[in-house]
Length: 139
Image: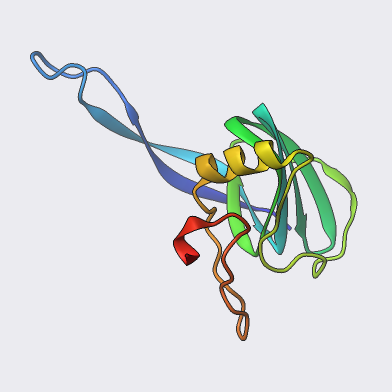
C-alpha cells in the first residue's frame, strides 16, 4: 500500500547578482512512496516503460530516459511519485531477484551497457557479483 510522505525537494532557482544562475531552493512537497519488491524497466531510447510490484499489486508507468535500450530488472527499493499510480493488476512479489540486462541486438545491448554504467544492484545474501557479458574489467 503506497504511503503519503512529505519530502524536501531541491530545485534550481534564480538568486542575486552575480550568482543568479547558481542558486538552489528547497520546498516541502507531498509524494506517494511505494516499496517495490522488484521493478522492471524497458527502455526505448528516449522513454522507458516501468513495471513494479508492491505487496502483490502491479503498477506500470512511463518515464523519460536517454539512450536506454532493452530490459533491466531491479531488486527491492522505494520509489516516490508526485501523484498516485493506478493499479495494473496482480503480480508475484518474488518473481525477480538480481539484475539482468537483455536486448534484441547485441550492438544495442553493449551501447546500453556503456550508457547505464551498471545500474545500482546490491547482491542478495549468498549471491556472487558476476561480471556482465562483454565486461572488459574482468580481463
